[in-house]
Image (cartoon, rainbow, N blue to C red; front, side, top):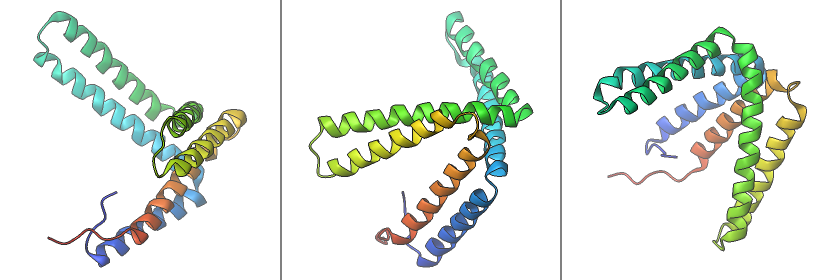
Length: 171
């Protein structure tokens, strides 16, 4: 994370992150729904971008695959925006599986490496696997609050990291 050199900017940014974190934690369903809609908008925009780049492809195969990719992004993005609650349920399962796999990879990295932060990597892997397992085990009942809550905690940790991290040297 890049830390602003200005103490005022650091505190303002951290304050805004904390306000957003509190809102996400207080209204997890709303924040999860808004995140799903935002993801849908970004996906649709990425699909349009893929379709606009069709003219830059050299051969027909490239154009076909890029067109398929673009259409899938657009259709998926529109689906996320059109059905945000159902999409949030699906995204919760996806995030649970993603976290479980990421945790296993962290554990494998800790087992294979001998770096100075090996213990922290091991702890990160264990926490990530447990968190992913909890999301999978409680799915779909946790779907309407989990993403917003996780995002809120992530924002809060980013704010605290911003406040406690050493400032970048001024040039």
